[in-house]
Length: 298
Image (tube, rainbow, N blue to C red; front, side, top):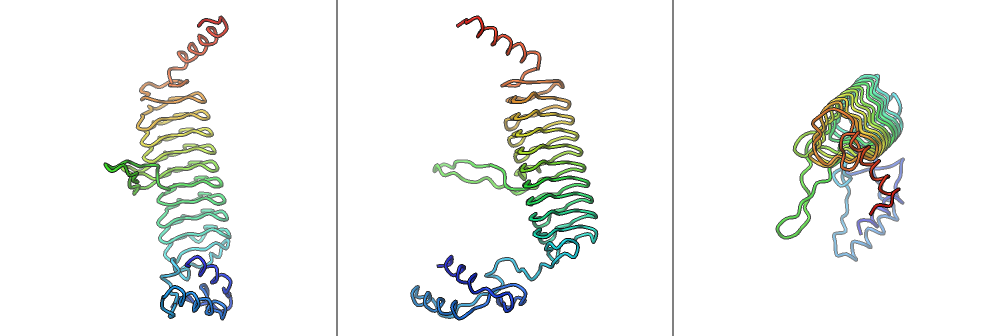
């Protein structure tokens, strides 16, 4: 019934005369004759009261608290703190208590969630979603990136039910970080997810909850980092590298493409393979395997 009522309300929506309870006349719903007729019919059919009203609480967010940003045409909540030099383009929304520094640029369709902090001179691309996070200064976040959503954490209780682990902390992005398109960085559960200063992340990268990445790291396309991984500084992960959960990688490590880290790496250097081993050992493994295949040794 609720779905059908919403559809009817859309049909009877009027931009010239609207009223959502005690809300302003700028945004809301109007009860036209067609809608009143169907409300009466549904009320009698469902044995509910004929006195049907809609107020601001029923509408969810009170949209009268948003105003159009003069510099770009997006919408900003009245409780958000936005520097006058910030650009918020059409279709972008800045939610309550967010803070945007000077010269921030928010692209069309981006959503800045409640209490998100964005440092000065940061550029947010089209359709980016930020929530439960902070972003440093002079960062670039490309199209479609999501930061601060819940991590993938579940457990099975004694009755065999699959239950969700609480994901209550934040994601913190450092200064001068660049994040590629359609990358996802989860919020933390027992510690904040952290991306260090000057780190660069390619497209289609997954960073799980509680991951801590040091400064000046590089993550190439399709890298997947499971939860609670700790990485030092100047770490480079080639394309499609996978890192299992709760693994530590020391500083100044380079991993070849398609490698998989299954245990801690404590010494700087180059690694490769599945599981990842020092690069020279991995090359010997590959050479030996090819020699065996060539000789037909069983």
